[in-house]
Length: 79
Length: 201
Image (cartoon, rainbow over all chains, first blue to last red; front, side, top):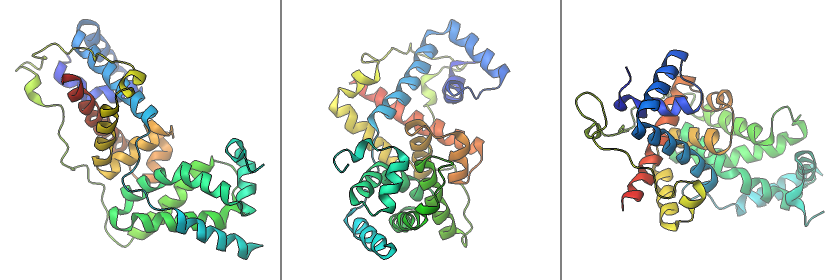
């Protein structure tokens, strides 16, 4: 039997359809009877969607001016 | 043509790039630079990441006439940066370390038999739109994202944010599918904890 404690470990794979058949059935059964774990899985799903919409950025992404300068030089040579 | 450079399809965009159109270059840099940096940091680490991405851009520009469109431009660019990063670390003995100080959901939330001690309450603002209407929360998510270990961040960015296939993610980062799944699980759990803490306030 699955316990609430096992759910966080499996939620991510479950949402991506990556759990084995046996594990998936066991988890689904637990979700049927456990309100908290249903909420947990739903929250993970919302977390994924939220990050997808938010599109957080890398820290100090670099200054692109030198890149554009190099691009200019590079494409001039090709002409 | 200059004004609607944003609406160009990939083929036209590539033609413009080969032609030396700077607007087109600025467009793809703004679209993909962040993503390439995430991949580079995951493979070579912070110190050489910027340099590797710069070199990757230059290789990409040189190789563009040979781009055959068998993958999307995005995936192609990521493979270039991944190859550059891998050759940079080839001499070192790099191992994927999953031991990055990650903490799973704290066990004090469960009793001895593994059941939750307290009922988990749904988030009040449950939809992504509602969550994102909260500026402080947005900043918190962004900060959590930036603090994720580089490999976790790269896996999450490619798979969850950019919709790359698991196969591409594994090839680009040079890791096994099971490692990639662990990285995704950890990254998502950290972000979930961030949002959840916010809901408590």
